[in-house]
Image (cartoon, rainbow, N blue to C red):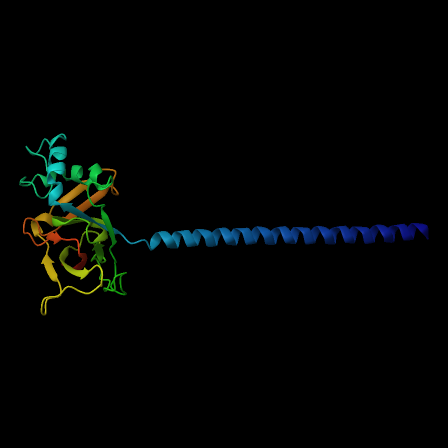
Length: 253
């Protein structure tokens, strides 16, 4: 009889131990699955964030008043073996020198130390749709509206746009025109003259026909095309102390 009771007690203890062991195993398995799911969701979120980043256009504002600072600096740098003179900025007389030493222009310290206006970045949508932060439509392969605030510089300034070839449907597209307008910085009123509300400028096809292999440290390394009206003076803009100047990509070819 005592032996039977001992066997029954041992059996009950074994069942309890097995039950507790299974419950602990189940909780650990659930925790592992939860951690794995959270990790996967985190990875998915990161991947999504990376994939939706728009390529950038880089806009340069070169004031005429800074030419005597820019020219001696660029002239002092090593020359290209392929061309006899250095590019000294868009107010300089340098023929095709920009094709050979344009990297030096981008890498000037003046863009970052306050001597020149900072390089402006703008998203380049890859599809049509929606509006940018200034209320203008987003157009595929046309950079979104940028603002050059009043007093950025006063007087003439060359505006040029550097765009990665990968941002233009893997170099199948070219920016053909840009559109500019001005607003009173105090009232926000659009500057008009009769029916005129802004200007459309056609990009110089000689300028954008050349591929620039940029290998400096100020922008992402890679192949770019340069867009502006140079040498035509359309984007040699007269900036001032009263109005904000706006510029956006307008059409492609």
